[in-house]
Every structure is written in structure tokens, then in C-alpha cells.
Image: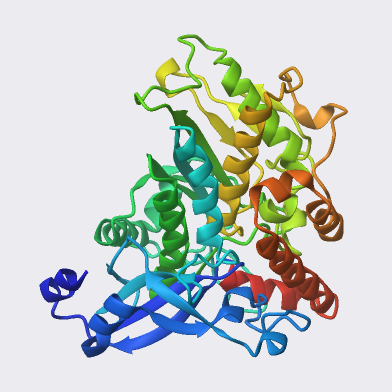
Amino acid sequence: MKSWLRKNPQVRTIRVAAADLNGQPRGKRVPVRFADKVVESGTRFPVSVLNLDIWGEDIDDSPLVFESGDRDGVLLPTERGFLPMPWLEAPTALLPIWMFREDGRPYEGDPRHALRAVLDRYKAKGLTPVVAVELEFYLIDDSGRSLQVPVSERSGKRRKAAETMSIRALDSFDQFFTDLYDACEEMDIPADTAISEAGLGQFEINLMHSEDALRAADDAWLFKWLVKGLARRHGFAASFMAKPYDDYAGSGLHTHFSVLDENGDNIFDDGGETGTEVLRHAIGGCLDAMADSALIFAPHHNSYDRLVPEAHAPTGICWAYENRTAAVRVPSGDARARRIEHRVAGGDVNPYLMLAVILGAAMNGMEDAIEPPAPITGNAYALDLPRIPVTWVSAMDAFEGSDHIRRIFAPEMIRNFLLTKRQEAHYMEELTETERVEIYLDTV
């Protein structure tokens, strides 16, 4: 890590940052001359900082605040090391960190440790998840009274139309996307294909698959931060909020995953189109835990505006082969790449918690040999299916009472997340819809 700074003498300051439960970066600005101390000893800040609400406020009845004396945790660098922050004016380096207790044990309320704990279950069985994510987001002009698509950087015009898979839409913001791909290269984020989506100024970028699911979550977290920061440099906003416009599709964060055994073979691949029994068991686990996991996939008030029928987001709990109306899709293609696509999460999720609950549910299914119902065919919206929770409150209740969730997350994580969401739900009721959009636009 120190060698990176020596190779980049232009860096003037560093940021040390961890993800809180909402995926918000929390940390410190540190003069570069003190970087060696942070690398060697880490830094400290209150444990409660990883359990703030969406406004950055303490949780009123959290035992992490006054009851415990608001004690410190120890924040140590992750294996990612230093990264540039290309969206800032001054040359700056980011050092991602995660939280530990004083005695060296991982702090179980840290979302990155929640994913690590799930991955430890795979490692104990000689298994390795291979993960890729697809992130949808909107470019938005939020300078006026209402949200609208930004003026094209090339034409100077504002095209108020959705353009699915339009090259023209991509070219309209060519300089932004060129800078974005350059920045991903600098930060070693494996950005692949970009397309324009069905919404007004909506785009999707795929991140390449990784055999390190922690790194895949890091990439998604960093990518969201980068996109939002870089958009502001270009004079507009970028947002991953689930549903910024009533009349256009929401933004999702789809996850593709397969699982390798100790020999590097895909345990979902049977050489044909249907996949193995283990594939079905993993799907069964995902479906069984889906309703109880909705609070992770849809963590905000605005999230539930996306989960409505015929709006390009799943609403029924089902699976299918090559069918994008299903919550879980098995894509076609080369059998060696047989995988599961989990399509429920919105773009507003915490990537660490999202991957933890998806991979944890799949592991539950494989351990218990859960057989899923038959795959559907046709339009899932037209079928009588069990439903994903349609309200924030019902999602909280399902999460709290779930045996599935207790197998995936530590008790402290479950408690902290519920306290956070309940406080947010209470105060969101006091806001207008415009005020809710304002808070979500920049945060999630």
C-alpha cells in the first residue's frame, strides 16, 4: 500500500472510508503525510457510525450510542489498498477500511463482514461463488423544480424520450461515459458493456464476473460512488434510486452467480440447458428466502414504487429459464457458464448486504436440498404467484421474523438494520414526496 503512494506523489490527501448499512461511505480525510500511520495501525471512529440513518443521524434507541458510551471500533484497511478518486479536483487517494473490535474480532454490524461470513460458509465446503452485477442508473438534471434528463453534452439539446439500447442516447453523453470508463480503469473497476435503458436518461453498465465476491461487492460500491461523483463534475446528477420518475421504469441491480468446486468446475453445469440438481436447490433457497429478504433488496421508502407489475421489475416469487419477468432467471448460452440471475434488488441497495443475502439464501437451499416449484413460462405478471412484500413495513416484519435471515446474518446485523429502517420509516412519513426524492437522489 505504501508503494502505491510512492508511485503517485501527486496525491495530496487521502480518504479512509467504510460502508455503513445504507452503503454510505463513512470515514475521514487524512493528510497524506500521515498515511503510513493509517496503513499500519488503521484508524478509529464510533461503532455507531456504521449504523446511521439515511440522513447520517444516530439511531435514537440504538444500544451502540449512549448505552455503550458511544465506544470506538478499530478500522483497518481492506485488501483493496489505495485507489484514486478521479471525480475530485485535487489528486486524492481512497483507502477502503472495515471495522473490527478492540480484541481483533470482526465487527458483525459491518456489512462487508456480513458478506465475508457468508463466503466463509462456501469456503468451508470448498466452494467459490463467481459473481457479476449489472447496475442501472439515471442521469438527471436536478437544477430546477422538477427532475428531467440533462442537456446533451454534444448537441446542447434535451431529448425527453426513453431510448432503449439506443446508440444515439449513449453518444449524447459520450464525454461522460469516456471519462467514466477511464476512471474505472484507474480504479481497477471491471466496467464492461454500457447500454441505454427504458427510462428517461437511464443507462446500465455491467461489471465483469469475479471469483472474489468481496471484490465484486467492493466494485459495485465504488462504482456507485464514482458515477455519482463524476456526474457532478459534468454538471448533472447520477442516481441509483429505485424509482426517480413515476412514469418510467425503476433502476435495478441484477446479480449473476455460479459456484465453482475445488477443481474449478461449475457445479451448476450438467452439460445441457437445464442445469444440475444443485442449481435447482440454490434457486429453491433463493425463492424460499425472497419475501424475507425484501428489506435488503428494497431498503428505502422509494424502493417499493419500483416493485409494481409490468414495470420491468419482478413482483412474483418464481423462477424461469430465459425469462426476464421472473424474479430468478437462468440465462441460456454456454453450459459451462450456467448461472443464476437474481433480478429483485433495486439500484439503491447496499451491495455487500445484497450479495450476502443472495449467496446466503442459495447456500441455505443447497444445504437443505430445497426443491423449487416448477419454472414458469410466459408472463410472470399474469400469473397467480406468491408476492414479494409490497410495503416497507411488511418487508421489515418479514425480515425480523425470518429463520432464513437468522441463518445468513448475525443477530447484531439484524437488530441494527431493523432499527435503522424503522427510524427512517418514522421520519419519512413527515416528508413530502419532493423531500423524499431530494434525500434519495444523492444518497442511494
